[in-house]
Amino acid sequence: MPEQLEPGVLMREINDLEGRIGELRQAAAMPDPNLRATLDAALVELELALAALRTIGTVQAGGEGRTAAAESERRVLRTVFQDAPVPLFLLDRDASVRRVNRQAATLLGTSPGYVSGKSFTVFCDLPTRAALRSQLAAVVRTGRRQRTQVRFLSRDKPVEAVVTLARVWIRGEPDPMVVVAATPVTGRLPAPERPQGRQAEDEAVATVVHRMDVLATASEMLLDEPVFNEPVALRRCARLLAAELADWVFIDVAPDPTAAGARKTGLHRQVVMGPGGERAEELTHLLQELDPTPGTLPRSVYAGRQGTLHPHVAELGMLGSLPDGSPVCGAIGATSVLCVPIEDGQTCMGTITITGSGEHGPFDLMDLGVVQRLGRYLALVMRAARLYRRRAEVAESLQASLLPRALPGIPGIEVDARYLAAAHGAEVGGDFYDVFETVTGWGFVLGDVCGKGEEAAAVTATARHGIRLLSRWKTEPAEVLTMVNTALLSEDRFVTAVLAGMENLGDGVRITLSTAGHPPAIIIRADGTIRTTSGGGVPLGLFEDFEPAIESVELSEGDTLFLHSDGVLDACDMMRERFGQERLAEILAAGASMPVRDLLLSVERALVDFCDGDLGDDVSILALRVLPQTLN
Image: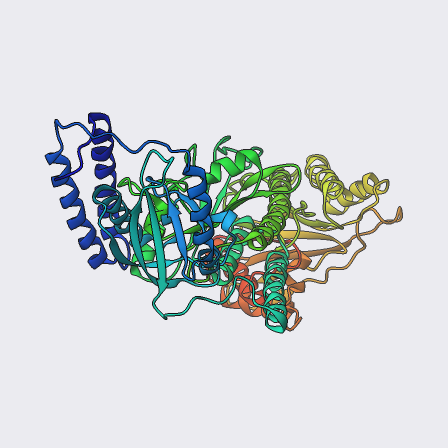
């Protein structure tokens, strides 16, 4: 005859049954599921359902009452329990661990106090948890002993064991309890929790050295970037953790509130890194789109700015749920989780979350300390990267204000210009160029201010706009540069420049060049012949007795005038060899018949390829060409 249950107890049994059936479905869908154990558990649940149906409408008989000898019996039970030669767990009706003996604590590689109060199933791997819950429920419900195989998540590595589950009634307890006896499949218990003697010292030293190596590698990787780059730093950090400590790594970042167009609140997933394999790749794509929601562990750690360690995961939903509703921890097989803030002591910028499956034991306090330090390193790099980015944005805006938005159209002349910023540094450069109308025709100027930064930008503005303004009244370029030299004498920086004044001759143009210590202009004839002008002169802003170099050249149809800054010639490759005049002349000769824009782009590509994108100085280039059959 089945045991008779009160209606309230029966409803609780049915609700528990529904929950366990859902867990069995999730277990069957996990990677590498234990299908045999899941099937056996499903059959047990069917038996429980049948037993529950038979008890509907009946009334449970009176239970055992408390007796005066209950406490004495419990003391005897505790003594026998602790001295048992096999691992024993005493569980409440809901599978919470009431007590473990010394052998059970040794099996798990932890202390008895840590195990007590936690759910028994959190110390087992995910694929067997649902089946184990069903077996425990069957023991409580029917009183029949059950045997099943489980995989305990021990401190160093998982331990395969066979457990025997038996229901017991203890005087003074209102509900039945379950005694679990575990037998490792090797027939032997694992080594004690902490190895003794020289072996313990060696293992402890090896563990500390490994953690120090992780931090040293992190420092090297995060700082091995001349220009701090936040996305690169995040991926490097995740890659290191995935290789050394974790199965899965999640980095969630709060947007920089000072960045233009940034979302002001919440965490947003930036990096997900997991193990290889087709299924892991599919999960990675899903998880990358899964921002942490309120109530999840990353959001709690971000709000509290306090690292959190869960050596044994009891709540599979702590990292949120996938679009199909399944918990993330279950999908990725996470049995141990830790999460730390990315914070620099003032601002919390995000979180790092790592998970493990128990193959190398649960995470411990040393792991937490390592990842917390890594989070601090990453925060400092992110702070520097964001500061650098803001300064770079300011520099770009200021630089743009020092260059013309667009070059004017000139009848019979094709003109274009290009500017490339140096690869390093976030300060505004000193290069400038301009095209403008003059008293006698058109003027073209290209110059370079010594140094970088706001002060250099102020001198750049003075030089560029001064040349443009004075060219409206002065007919000779040399006069213009002389007056600008006077204006710059009070500055602490000098300026090199080449100013070209153009006059229309009907069948061509005359160019009057006035050079102040700048690289000489280059003439590209229509047939590809290259001629370099004399150049010379002294830079602006150095001496009161100023005199520029003056030269006059005539351009016919198809001829091109090319102006450039010294950043072109001084660009270096990995062997520190300069780009130089000869390479530039070859490129210009080969592009003599190209449209001016294409000619400038060919010079730009050659420079970038030569130095592998590592330009040491700003580069400005400007070219004008006499178009055929368009001059009057």
